[in-house]
Length: 336
Image (cartoon, rainbow, N blue to C red; front, side, top):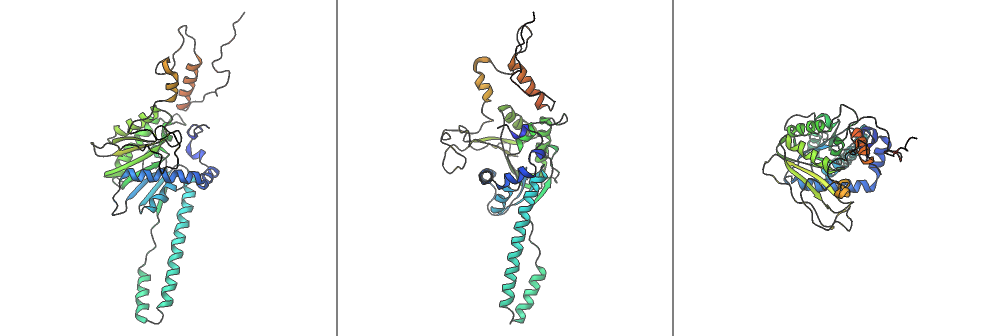
């Protein structure tokens, strides 16, 4: 299965059908919950008070629901309107349930206090002073690659689940991954309060993407690193970019065991830790063929590997490129 980032813009991929499928999948709900729980753990938020958290790429609000369960207030932004519609349905449904509980409790209290005039008066005063409960989460339709449109020092923390890797791809000539990443991290640095942390979980396609992301974050002033959980597992492996304002901050060790992990398999019991990313599997498979992109032949001819690499580079730049077929790089017969 190809990566969704290669199919086009995120707002086109996560349409109404895909958004509902995503939100109704019990497997996806479980994965999102586990990743969000891990992100909250890495944030190390104070336990004596709620925090105001920014959720970048909030999607259908699955991660925001976990934040609510931990007692935090959140604001989510996403580029897909259909995903935000799903999140808004969840918020409205929870608000209606809370208002229904208030009405039931008011009816019970009125029936119990009908015989006491003083209590009736106090109850009326309480009802007049009662204000509507705040929404458990707010939503914003926004592309994080254009920067975050919030006031400086607004948030106590930031999380992002499975969204950051989208900035490593370009769908038009104007979308340059390095510029979009720098713009995002620069705005994130501004909207976070000093002493805050950010935990951004993402799926890098290669080590180059992980390096690009970490370099752009460090360029704007962040400290930290990439935490890799279950580095030797195919299914359970997760990358978390943990950022802090403290220059001496060091990202914690990644998880290595298999206990209590929903996404684990039997191969994830080896050691792991903080690193930028694993080696690119395509380079590892190349072995002794050398590092870097494939080279042309000595006689000026183009090898199949060189052609495939060139076409892949053009695609990432957003240029129209023909699909790869069995004839790509095929040697033509000699002319008579």
